[in-house]
Image (cartoon, rainbow, N blue to C red; front, side, top):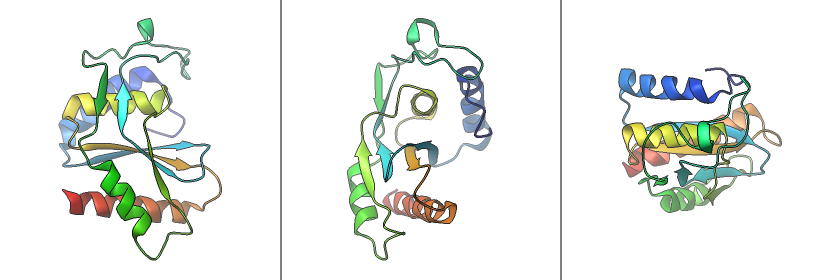
Length: 154
């Protein structure tokens, strides 16, 4: 999926297909936001999706189409990930992480809910990265550090 493929219905089919095909031990979804640090998302909600996507679609009743709980929280230890990321030296270009409880009620959170619901909360994380203020290389290094910490925690 490209960075411009912002559509709920594509998430409905693509995420479950990718999980079924690859059956990864860990999936880290990444989205961009107008933030100054990495945000480690803790949960995704089933409701409140009222933003229209690029296909001019909005979920019926503002709810995710998958049946499931109102909120799903990752089982990954986000607090430990946060602490380790921020403590590790050398720092990645001053990039820090913070814990977030709101992934945005749009495609990012919708994707996170889909993945948490399809495969379970022990194998899924969503990370928001800043879209400005850091180079692509610095963001990549930060994401690599997150992946390394998560794999060690598993």
